[in-house]
Amino acid sequence: MVKPKRTGAGDAVTKLVLDLFRLNNQLLAAGDRLVAGLGLTSARWQVLGAIAAADRPQPVAWLARDLGAHRQNVQRIVNDLAREGLVAFEANPHHRKAQLVLLTKEGKQRFEAAMRLQAPWSDRLSAGLSVDDLETAHRVMLIMRGNLKAP
Image 1: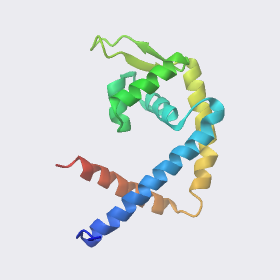
Image 2: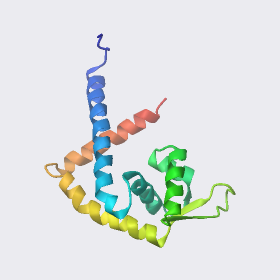
Image 3: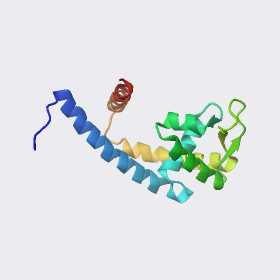
Image 4: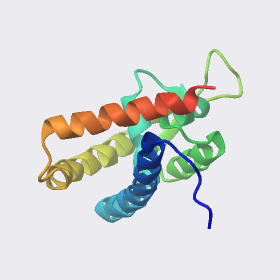
C-alpha cells in the first residue's frame, strides 16, 4: 500500500481525527448508558440540550445548525420527543411552516435530571487532566471546526 504524502501536521491531524471518531463513538455509548434510566439516548439528550441552551424557542433547522447535525435527523428526534411530551411546538411568527420548538415542563425536568447525572460523570472523565490541557484541546477542536468551514 502506498502511503499518501502529508506534512507532519497532516499526519498528526489524521491520527487525531481517527481517535476523535473512536472517542465520539465511546462518548455516545457512555451517554446512552448514563441517561437510559431517564428514557433518553445521547441523541435525544443533545437535542434537549440545544433547546434548553437557546435564548428563545427556535425552529428545527436552527437547532440542527447549532448541533452541526442534519435537519432531517433532528426533526425525527424532535418528533419523537414531542410524542413523549418532552417538547411542544408553537407557531413561528416569521415562518408559517417552521414551527418553534420548546421544552415542556416534563422535558425540562428530564433534561435537568440528565445534567445532574452528567456532573459527577464529567468529573470522573476529566480525572488526570488539567484544566489547561482541556482548554488547549478545546481550542484545537474549535480551530479544526473553523478549518472545516473554510473553502
